[in-house]
Image (tube, rainbow, N blue to C red; front, side):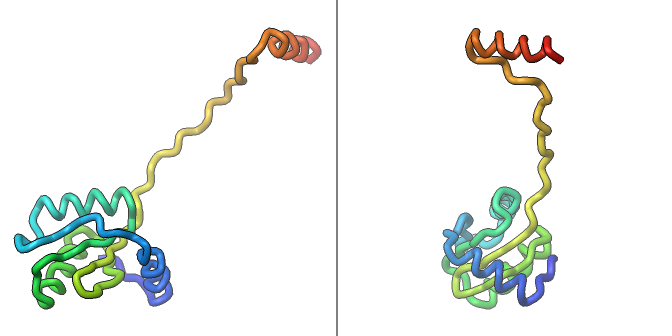
Length: 120
């Protein structure tokens, strides 16, 4: 489980303020399918809200703890039926741009490009 300091928590809470819940958990609790969906959402967004329906307060605390332990995310906020979770997005490979020269669009541009190359 990731630990955040008070400044990071404040920043994450402010970022999450405008978000809508992306995962819902009802009476069945935290199932394998729900965990996969939360994991997918954390990979895609990094910061998410989870809505809990019909779950008692003590069970909500236990659900938050189990989600954070199994997925390695940080609990940002727990207010009523809403949980806010954060995990850094996984790094994606960035494609480097090709070094090819763009093709000229018109014959006039092509002639000017070849003329420049001949001068070198």
